[in-house]
Image 1 (tube, rainbow over the protein chains, first blue to last red):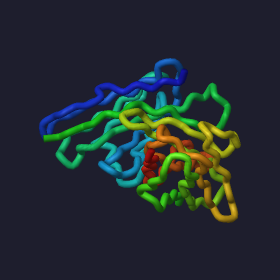
Image 2 (cartoon, rainbow over the protein chains, first blue to last red; image 1 turned 90 degrees about the vertical axis):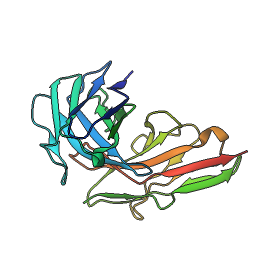
Image 3 (cartoon, each protein chain N blue to C red; image 1 turned 180 degrees about the horizontal axis):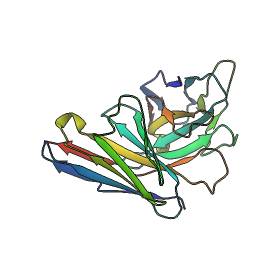
Image 4 (cartoon, rainbow over the protein chains, first blue to last red; image 1 turned 45 degrees about the vertical axis):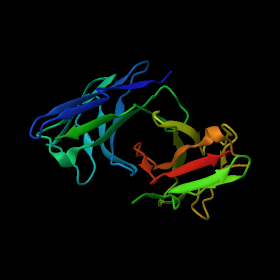
Length: 118
Length: 109
């Protein structure tokens, strides 16, 4: 149980276009999902916390108008990179917490989406 | 601010040797500490967490509040342990994780 999927697994787009990445909890309901970003050979950096039915909470330095997050249901959060530029190229990873599991704050991670902006 | 430090980018050992992956943290309250592992071409997955005080795949980690450390240990490394290991912290009231920079463990035959 507790599987998180992401779609697409990779995407290549032209500079200036927008890209949407989906994160789904397949067998549990996630009121909170998290979006991370990972540059090559670096660690995961939290971008934002996605809350079902309310606005996302962005980390300092992350542009909310550039990285639009929507969490319209208990099993789906989307990250839209608007007007993407080459410097947005990165590996985007989502995670979700299963509130039904009472043991601590374990998060389940998606497989990630590699975005390449030409 | 919370911070997780993993001083070693790469740790290479021979099969059967003991392993210790270091993790130090900075947090003013009572943190929740985790070790996540990422095998080649697989997603990040939880290895163990300090509140469970369990041993997974022969790995253990003890939270030392005095030294603010949560080192991961295994007495006898196996080749299948080769992977990227991340130490992570979650602060009270904040469910997001802060990750260390990761340590790549290579277990040679």
